[in-house]
Image (cartoon, rainbow, N blue to C red; front, side, top):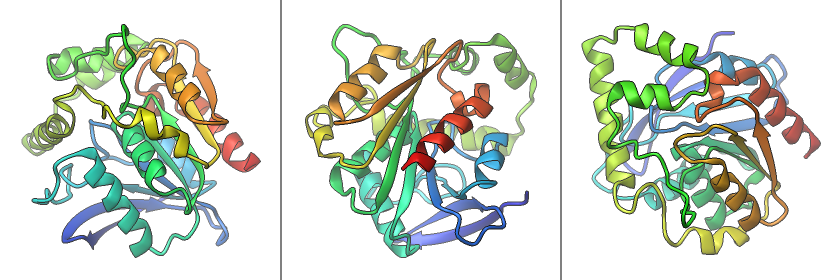
Length: 262
C-alpha cells in the first residue's frame, strides 16, 4: 500500500509527515509518534496498521526531514506542538500511540489534554524514573552498542549493522541524536514532574513493553501502569525495546485489538 508524504507548517515549524490508510473512508485515525531513531522509512509495521487505520506518522521537530525550530527546548514543547498539529489537521477524535521518546511525548500530550483522544498506547515509553532501576544510557553507547541493545534477537541487530548508511543517512542519524540529547540529556530521558500528573489521563490506555528491554527495563512499564488509572500492561515475550520492528505483527495485533474494543 503506497503512503503519502507531505509537509505541514505549524507554529512556524515545517515537519515531514507520512500517511497511509486503507480504502475505508471511515477508518479511525491513529497518530503514531516515533522514538529517538526517527521515522525516515515506512516500516512493515506501518503498512500493517495502515490497512486498518488512517495512520499518520510525523517526524518530530528537530528530527529527519523536519525543521529544528528555535522554540524547541524540551519534550513539553513537543506536546504543545502536537496539540496544535492535531487542531491544524482537524482531527477532532483520534487514537494516539508513541514508542520510546514518542511514548514520552504522547504521555505529556495526554496529561495536558485528553479531550481529542479515543485511546492512548505507550510502547516502551521514556518519561519517568523508577528509583533503583537503571536505564540504558543511550548517549554513552556507540552506534553498534545502541543497535545491539535495542533488540532481544541478535539477528535484527546484525541485519541493521550489515547495512551501509550513506552520508545523508548518517547526517540524519546525527541530527536525531543531537535533538534527543537536547531533550533528554539531563535528567536522563525523563521529566521529574510527569509522574505526579499521569493521574490526569482519562483516555483508555494500553502500555506495551518487551520483557528484555535494555533501555527501559520492564519495571518502567509496571510503573506507568500503576500511575495511569485504569491502564493495562501487555508484556511481549522475548522482546527488546524496538517492538515495532522486532515484534511488528504481535504489536499490531495487540494494538488493533485494544483500539477496536474502545
